[in-house]
Length: 333
Image (cartoon, rainbow, N blue to C red; front, side, top):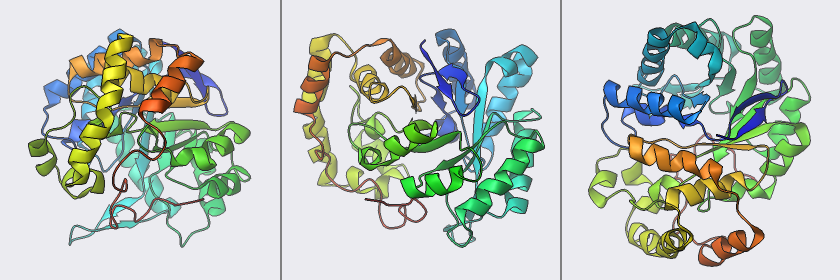
């Protein structure tokens, strides 16, 4: 497994990490045993970065990771670089709101630490911006959590380049997380560049395009049973069928090159910059093995040109979020 530096401490972590949202039924039902099997496979592959959040299964994802750590001891905790997030609050009607007040964030972090069974995380993200509080104020308050030893670094999810620059001027921002893949390329319009300028690691989630960039895209039935997926524009007809067809040349290209499509998709993301790591999520050990193999692939200029030919910028049908899902992420450019 290749490693890359993360954050201002430049601690080396695996170029491919575990996106633990899949430990909480986000892409379909799973079990504790299955999630633990993914973590074992990650260890065998040399993966050291795990990304979770307090709202993934309302603590379920963190609890599973905590059980894994408890069973394997202090040495395994020291080996791993663990990130979690907070700021999303669920309303009684099922809606969401965002809270960036430091008292709330610290309380949620304390609860996460208890579930994880550790006295600190390596990275603590603000999951979504609360626009009522200046990001400079939030960054400074997060810095106090670093001083307290509850987290080694701070980050933000789904923010604009200008927000990163404002926050970083107050306290070093170790990582920014956003969706990035051959299907979603908005970060190229400034965010990747801002991260490189500030020394901030860019963490790419959904790097295989919510399964379209794999050899086994989610079925229509699987999509219909997923609360997030069934209302996502790219997963709704006629976009769903159009995206399946549009990505087929990529799957064929990957096969011609001798790779699983998921491996090639991960390799492409990592080729976009040495300051980028990817955090795919899966419920399948076999699929996880395909994902981590992407870190072993070195793409030539000709390879990259061939990929761009079959999947040019803008090929995906439908927006990446619907109106409700766009509440929170910052649009830019």
